Image (tube, rainbow, N blue to C red):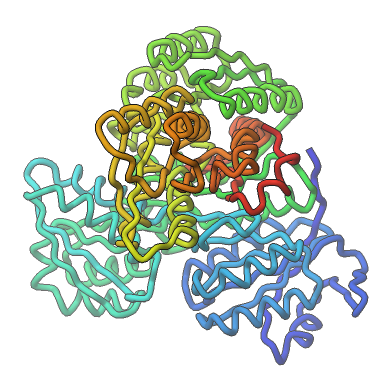
Length: 628
C-alpha cells in the first residue's frame, strides 16, 4: 500500500498577516502564482470553526503530533472564529495557496454545505470533521457520535447508582454547542428511564473551567446532596473538580465527564489522579484525518465515506490499558490474514455483487478468506461463527440476517480472542459496553431512508395529500428498521405526505409482487407513491402493477434503494422514478479495515461507504458505468 513521506509545518492563517506568519514560522513551503512548490508534494488546508473551543485546539495538537516527522507535506490552518462568512473566505484563501486537500470543521454545517460541495466538485478532496453536512458531497467525514457518548455516560452513572438510585447534578455550557446538546440529549434519554434517579440541571452559560467552578460554588446546597455531578466536557469537569475539592466535598460527590483527552488536567489525567470517577472518551480524529488524507493523496483504495469514531468509558480500572492502546504503534507487516466471513445469503443481485466484491478484494489485500453462505438462516450463521472459532481465524466478519440474538455467540468469539467486524448489517446487543464487535462497515441505512423521502419531497408535489406505500425488507433486519426510521424522520417534517400502507417483501422480487397482490385483493388502487426498501422488491412490484393495468411512473411514482443495473434499466424504460444507492462494492474498504485492525489501529465505531442518488433524468448517462 502506498505511503507518502512528509514533513509538516503549521501556521495559523489571518488574512492580513499570513505571509509574515509563514516567514516567521520557518516553514519550507514556497509557492508562486503558477502553483509550483519547491520540496513540497502536497499542501493540506485546515479550516477550523473556532479555535477558542478546547476540542479544536486539541485537534490541531493531534494533527501536529501525527505529522511532525514527515518530509514533504505543508499544512496551513485557518481560524473562522465562529463566523460562517469568514470560514467561506478562509476556504477561498486556502484554495488560493494551491491546497491539494481540505480538512474542515464547519462552524455552521448548513451554511457551509454549499461551499464544501463546490470545493469537492472542483476536484479537491474534502475531509469534513465533527459536524456532518447533509448529503455525501465530500470525500470523507470523520467524527464522533455525540449522542451515543451521552448515552454511555448516562448508562455508566445509572449502573454506578444501582437499585438505590440517587441525585445527579447535570451541567450544561453554551446553548450554541451542538456537541454539548447532542451529548445531553443522549444522557437524558438514558436517565429518563430510571424513576429512582433525580436530576438537577445547572446551566453555566459558557463552557469554561471558571464558569463551572463558580456555578458549583454558588450551588453548594444542591451539590452537597448530590451523588454524581455530570459535565459533558473536560474543561467544565476540571472546574467542577476544583470547586468540589475546595468545598471539602470530594469524598462525598463523584464526577463523571466526557471528552477523555490525554493532556495534563484533561479527562484521562483526572481519572488517573482519582479526581474523576470516569470519563467517556471522544476521539479527536486528527490521527485518523492524517491517515486517510495520506491514503487519499496516495490514491489508495479502501477509503470509506464516513468514519464514526469509537468512544469508551475510562475508569481507574482500565485507564492504563486505554492509554496503552491509544499510544500503541501501528504496524502492518503485510503478512497473510485469515478471515472467516458469514454471508447472510444470495437473495438478490445486490448480494451477489457484494459477495464478488469481497472475494476479489481479499485476493488484493492478501487475505485468506473462508466464506460461508447462510441462506437467511441465523442458526447457520451461529454454526459458521463457531466453525471459524475452532479454525482459529484472525478476524471474523458477519453480515447478520437479523439484528438481535447474537450476544452468546459473539461472547464465544471474544473469549477466543477473535475480533468481529459487522459488514453491511449491524446487530443490537444487550450490553453495548461489552464491546462484542469491533466496528460496523457498510451503508448508513437511515440516511438512505432520509434521501428517499427528500427526493419525494422535492420531486413529487401536488395540491392534495400524497399517499405512500412502503414495501419493507425482512422484519427485524437492520436495513429494514433503519431505512424505515430515516424515511419517517423526513416524512414527519412534511405533512403533505402520509403512509397509507406498509408490508414486508423480504428483499425479494416475488416478495414485492406479493405485497402489491395483497393490497389489491382488499383495496382499489389509491396509492400515489411507492417506497421500496430495495430494487428487487420494486421490480417485482412494477411487474404486478403492470399486470393489473397500473402504469408505473405514470399512475404511481416508485422510489427504491440499491441502484442496481436492473433498476437503471427500469428508470430508462420509464418505470422506476428514483434509486437511492446502497453500494455493495465494499470489498476494498472491508479488507482495509481488517488489515487496520490487525495492525493495531484503534477501530472506529462505524465505517460508512460512499453512496449517491439517481433518478430517471440521469439514468441513461450512468447505466453503462454500473458495476452491478
